[in-house]
Image (cartoon, rainbow, N blue to C red; front, side):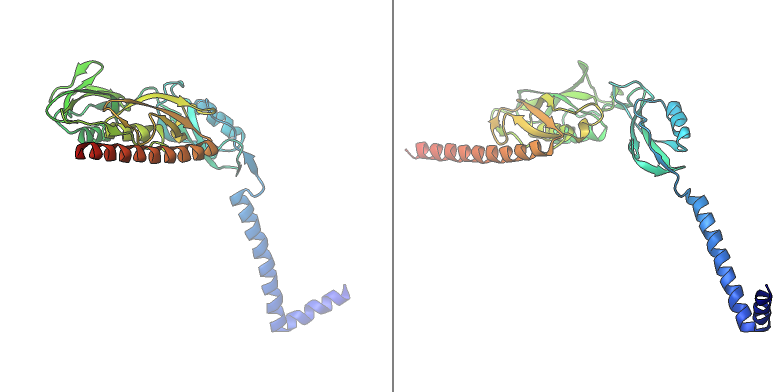
Length: 294
């Protein structure tokens, strides 16, 4: 104790030593306080597993999140007829992810009904313009019906649920609904090449088919595809094949997959089909030229 008193006395008598000791003490205290505050603010070490909220109502999810010290916030809404209204369809972070206590979990809920939109009047437009206007309104094409006319791909009539859409009509449809278009088929109309669909989503494939004058046929979904993840699936197979020449209005069937390996094989098959179609067309043109020369 005497030694400690003498040491303190010497330090107190020496301004430089005294200041160094005070500075060192201040650093130690500051480090302790900073570490304490950091732990309080970040809740260091309090890691939580995010529960699976799919299928729950928001109230149920909030109750489940409260037990894990998580905050549930609605980020978006979709309309999937296969699921009850008000239930959670998707979440971020996903179930099983490890997050710190107090983290917000954003959820997408299922709407009770689809949003209604006014059907735009597209009679008299070209097929490409009509398709663009319908898609901008959140609608699609249910069916293309070709009938003889002086021009090809001019919209002659527009129908929804069997009712004709007239100028100034305020008829509404659920967003995503399909509109039937009666389209002209000129006397000079020829068979058209079926577009390549491999690698596209069902929505993108439909749009490409409509623009080329074809109808969407049966859609076959692969393993693991449901109403929630179908938008992630890609076309890996189609019939008729890529590049084959078909009459306008022909239905094209597609197959969807989530399997990357299956998709890669589909791309290769589509390439082969396109090359075969190109060769067949070239051979046909060559034969026609030869026959005309005779």
